[in-house]
Length: 306
Ligand code: 3EB
Image (cartoon, rainbow, N blue to C red; front, side):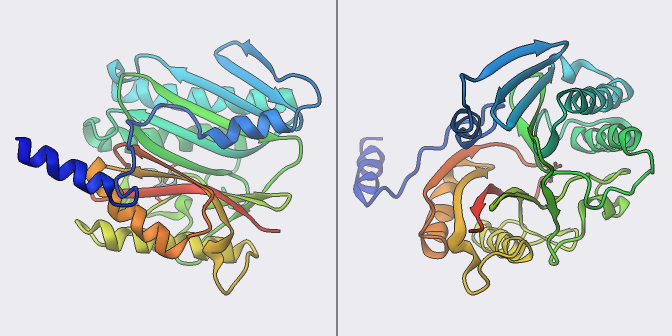
């Protein structure tokens, strides 16, 4: 026991090799509050409207809502609760006269079984699809309309959805290396997820959850190194697609949140980030379950296109 403790403290002494990896909390990353604060001519206003908490700061607003006992719901009730959540958020958006930029979805018991639908993430996708379909009218035509997002696991029983919005619409960006999420086949669930790979506004690019997926297929099962490199190729491609620097797209990446399924993966991901994206200003590691069991790492972030 003593021996292994010594080993741990020795490795800690080597140039910050071991990052802290807290369990994910169901909240957007810190840059979101800075965005609301910075763009504020007066103090940030926060109020409740029905089930939605609205925080407004200048041109931006963050809409947050939860389904408290989501894990107790039947498959059908859960799907309906997700669809309802999306309808409520989008109704609130139009009341506020704002356009969606970015969604964070935090799912409790993300791989819990949900009958013939599959797991809870797949059931979530059915509900999100239904909610978006009602809002968009034309079923399935989500291109250039849905914002970028992430969908990750969270401990506890509540489902949380946060929506960042702006007074001017963003531009949805797709990744040529990946199928648009809303065109996934039924291989990963009866209804596809609905999100853009990134949303740009002004000269900022919000990059949604990005993992080791090529086309629609998960790559490099059981290899966190290869998954991280594949993920960073996807992030490069989406920055390029948005018109970012083409020689080394990762140089414009600013803040990232890195989700790892197990804390022990963090040092490997950290050293690849130091190799390929040394300009990063802030890296937050969190431990979370991801939407497909074979995915070990997922990275989201902000890039500066100017
Ligand atoms: C994927 O399909 C898997 O469900 O909102 C990335 C971004 C992922 C968003 C979501 C899921 C979601 O790329 C990971």
